[in-house]
Amino acid sequence: MTARRAPFLVWAVCVGIAVATLVLLALGAGESTPGDSFGLGGLGGLSFVFGSLAFGTVGALVATRVPANPIGAVFCFMGVLVGLGDLAYQYADYALFVSPSLPAGEVAAWLQNLGLPPGFGLLAVALLLFPDGRLPSRRWRPALWLALTGVALIVLGYAFRPGPLDPPFDTVSNPLGIAGLYDLTDAATGFGWMLTGLSVALAAAALVVRLRRSHGYERQQLKWIAYAAALTGVAVVADVVSFFASLEGDTISQLRIVLLGIGFSAFPVAAGMAILRYRLYDIDVVINRTLVYGALTGTLALTYLGSVLLLQLVLSGVTQESGFAVAASTLAVAALFRPARRWIQELVDRRFFRRRYDAASTLDRFGMQIRDEVDLGALGAALRSVVADTMQPAHVSLWLRSPGGGG
Image (tube, rainbow, N blue to C red):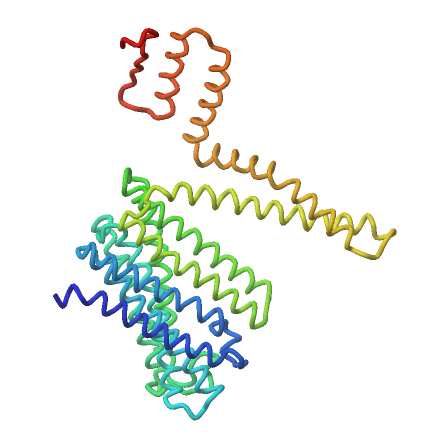
């Protein structure tokens, strides 16, 4: 009974941590602190509250419904780690920079490094074990050990590195730092991050291997997690681009963390739907809509910006106002929406969903044929051919009722 209740207890802990974090975020909402410049204040901190709840909730569901699958336990552990790391960060930020009278602010600043980084590292473990809780083969055991070793080195390095903590808490000295071991512990942390990154890359490779060999239910499950990985990849690329573009400011930093938090939270949601087989085959529709509307949004945005700039350049000698250019560009984008969506949908179907595209083309041709065909025998043959091409059943037969109604 205790083992069955454990996932719900972990979920309750995640909820309690989330409530405490939300209280701290609300208390510090009107204050500007050094912690905000790193993006984990405000919306950034809130995104990891949802990430913790996502991992804890999905982990509890998987652990209770599929107890033999260790991914449930991994997700539960990740939910607690991420939640504790976020809570410690918010408490340290509030206690050190807003209300110094609160106790244990320095301890919280030390503790926050032991929550979020290991939580990211365990993501490789979950990917390696997805979807059935087993490695693809014994050859992937080194990747699992790389992930666990990387997490251990990160924790040990952050825990015992002497001197100031990382910004924004660099005014605090590590209370457990071991004097004279800075170079060793700093190297352990860096090496741990390197091993963690390598293990994530190997886990992605394992996912590709599984996907190529899969079929049926397993293939749909892997599509869900691949979709989540793509979302996370987009978030990471956006974060890197904004960093190298030198986009600064508290708002930009928070948007970066929000994107990373959303990408991070997508994993447990996608994995939960895949493992529990909830609306499993909807992934094809989700991918299709993402490709279509993502491309459509980009196309319309570029069209709008390009037309505004072009019209402003053309009309610069006539008027100094940009209202006409904006209005004309808006109308052009509105007129372009439907044909652009239709064109992009056809392009996506043709490139990524060929079977659906071919089936739709076959049905269109049959619709044109049925309007002109008067021979019942030829029509029946065409109907059987269409069903065979689009549905691909093992056998096709057509029964026609006689005109007299006698069968």
